View (spheres, rainbow, N blue to C red):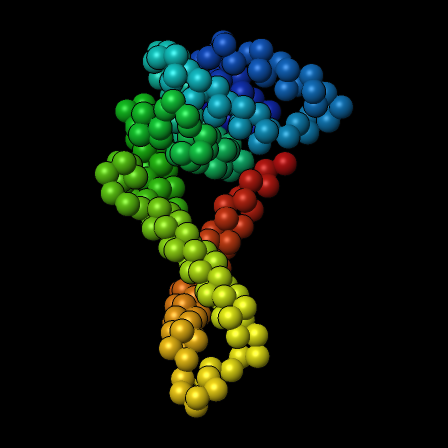
Length: 230
């Protein structure tokens, strides 16, 4: 009975170079740059280069090369050790699912190339980052878009409240809201009311965003911590 071939850190890129010969110059340049590291190459940097290379192949319409690469990535997950499996998911699939990596393409363009194990990992990544459907970010407002919109609203509210407070102090630097006749100055009272309302809105927004910000930082920290392959 033959032992199952195990893909390891040392041989994982052999299949990549065979599947995509056009990646060879990128790989050789990477190895030359980090030759002083010996066998301890920072492969997570090479994985970023591979993800960008795959985006370039998509832009050029080189489908057969992409199919071959995704077949290799599938084998990483099925036959690789722990390091290689994490490299496939966090090093490649997570980068490809990140819209920031794309200009002329989108994460959805890679959906048809995903083989079963990669599809499962892809869906888990999208669910983890709050986008459970591969098509969702094109058809609906996702959580990230809503958070950005609310962040802009909060920022504008802060600017507006600061402007109102500045106008109030310029108009009445002593902070006195009663005129010399003993009646309330309508302009001053209006400015004070608007200012208080805006500050209240800002405070509520801060209370809403604080836990979301902590959650986002935790998720980012957790995701980055998984990149410690070296």
